[in-house]
Image (cartoon, rainbow, N blue to C red; front, side):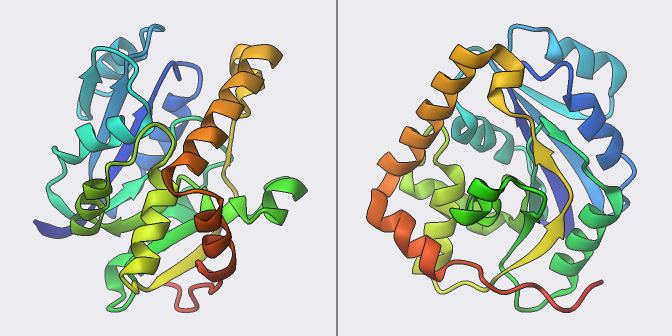
Length: 230
């Protein structure tokens, strides 16, 4: 694997949002590869990306398997030392912030995971430390992500599984501020389905290792900002 970075973006029915994310990532020189994984979409996002972004590697799953399975499928195509995990439904994603974070991760000799902290999250999210613990934008070594999947995370369990792996293996984790925010599910599919999907996501997270693991991460995980900016 070469010492560069791949952007890995799982998506499900994100036709209205993913191109905005890709337009930002295309401009980032520190990315040598972009992989999108279609997690069983029904809105023709796959065809849109293939048509408008022919240089992107697109992996297609036949049915909706969840974020963890989609990332695992894309990970098999990664050929770089580092991977930048990125959600497909972001708004206010800034090239300068992502580029700075990737450069910092690649240059650092000590950082194993660099999280883009969603500093404009709502108060409730910050109170639960969800702006760090569950941020989908994170840069890490590919070999570490491969090892994370040995614990078999499912559905929406990937972030909490990464956090647990980092704590258990005494890895060095830092954060940098990010203006990016995810689109609330109620704006995607309506109030009822959006609320149900949010509840499924929360349930999936906490069934991975239980509430005690969440509190361990709340207390111990990633309290330090990265101070050396590339």
